[in-house]
Amino acid sequence: MSHTVPVLILTGYLGAGKTTVLNHFLATGRGGIGVIINDFGDVNVEAALVAGHVADPVSIAGGCLCCIEDPAQLDDALRTLSRPALDLDAIVIEGSGLAEPPGLIQLVLASTVAGVRFGGLVEVVDAAHTAHAEAGGWDLAQHVRAAAVVLLTKTDLAQPGEVAEVRERIGRANPLAMVLDAPHGAADPRLFFDTAERTVPEGGQLPLWEFGTSPGYTHAHHVRHRAESLDVPAPVDPAALADLLADPPDAVHRIKAVVDVPTARGLRRFVAHSVAGYVCVERAGRDPDAPAHSVVVAIGPAQDDDAVRPRLEALAPVTAEAPVPSARDLRRLTRFLRG
Ligand SMILES: Nc1nc2c(ncn2[C@@H]2O[C@H](COP(=O)(O)OP(=O)(O)OP(=O)(O)O)[C@@H](O)[C@H]2O)c(=O)[nH]1
Image (tube, rainbow, N blue to C red):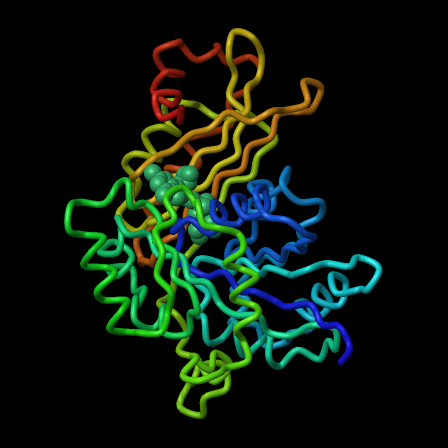
């Protein structure tokens, strides 16, 4: 049989921890891994969050892969990454936070690229924010049903009893899935390969592909979400950003930002995340000669009244002439720094 590269699908609601799992996997795993990333918004921020761990993540932005009508973009990416010269052990597709697992599986199964095969689906579930995700239209049962492995993140933030309850609900929806705690993405990378190995079912094994081809499955377009973004050649106001992250408009579940902030010692770059108002900020390196650049994306269930745009616009531009933010304003952002 000719060699085919397994394609693993990584799904999970907005901010569940997919990139964290992927980065942990890439940092601790062995072998060559190709990565395909799908951003829901037009601004391609996800690749920057994975970059540094992998040579060239292939990025598909501007919409959910599971909704695209023309799969050529995905096939192009799979064709590129499955070239024998690259000799990759696996390809991981990180779905956007809105991707429906069956839709993605279907897409991989329907791929015309001869060098790949479907290698299983790993669903990442944020154990601390399921209620918020469900309020946004995410459906736990629907998401875990097609998974071979379910990874529970944010177990460190969950209330007592919350993790057990989520586990129990997952068990009811998909008794055959392997459910594992993966705080801060810490899952054994071998799992991914094992998942790939288990795609040919033996006695009772979940026939994963059926979820992608089941005649009973019609792609229900996910609850309409809106991504608003700010992409400016300028630094942002750290205090306004801290306020937005910690107290986002109701319609926003997820914010991710890669921003420059002016300080007394020049521009500093930060990566910031907010999931249901839970904030995490990290420092990032920047080329001192590079011009200022800030990207902020806010995503959530669409609502008619737009409270999001003005909050984004309030972040920037911070011009070269503007006074450097006070140490107090800077601390409002840096108090969320991890470690
Ligand atoms: N405390 C805690 N934070 C976590 C854990 N896993 C992920 N995070 C944080 O949650 C935030 C979102 O994580 P990501 O990995 O970017 O989530 P994602 O699912 O890729 O996000 P989208 O691509 O926007 O859907 C980041 O700040 C992570 O550091 C965890 O187990 N515990």
